[in-house]
Length: 336
Image 1 (cartoon, rainbow, N blue to C red):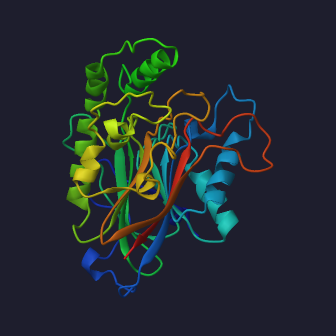
Image 2: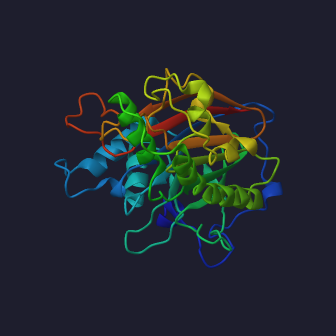
């Protein structure tokens, strides 16, 4: 297999995809009405799986082993930072299949944040975002992929920047106050305002998807949003043990559901108290179980068969801490 097949760089300069592709309308619909099952992985692997402060110098390879074990069809990778080619090589060695890594964030100095990995064929890579105040190729990008049964799927990796003060830290501070028998010190408005700063990113992401994904084709989006799910923090779930009777009028992630997307983890695990879905952070021992990493799906009667997080090392894998400061999210989605 050629290096070109394995590794695709999405262009920042031109709207033309770097892969030669047939027009979308020419793609065969070999699935013929049968459902398409897709396993999706979203994971912020933290500094490309490398950190000078970690005792485990082989951590990047451990990250790759975990990716292989998750067995995804599509992998949305955040903080990839130089690991892209090794991830492709590791997946190909383990599965015996051809894999493509789409480098969404261009960089020759290891600052390649977002990648999209898949063993599906790539029909076309979407051009980098333009015309937005802050949102660019560091924040979102994707490709139209063709599943094994011929169905087209539009897949997007995303990352929104954290804010200062960060909404998660503010919620954590109030939780610690209540747990200690004190009145929460952070006003709810300050927390709501911190979350509102993410709404522009999400609005840009949805606009970008609307531009590039045909309305009659399914869409998968995954990545790190650096904010909490609005629906998890309503008054309905204030009774959850790690919510301490607190609720907030968050809004950023509601934009996805308002646009017709399904929060796949919450669809599979509707009880917030029983399944908080913590992704931040398996290494920090938070009082609140922050869920800031997501997989969203939209399309023809999307059914979420299963979804779970990964926050523990593989069985038999020695080490004291998880491979990343983020848990991974896995969702099994059926597109009918």
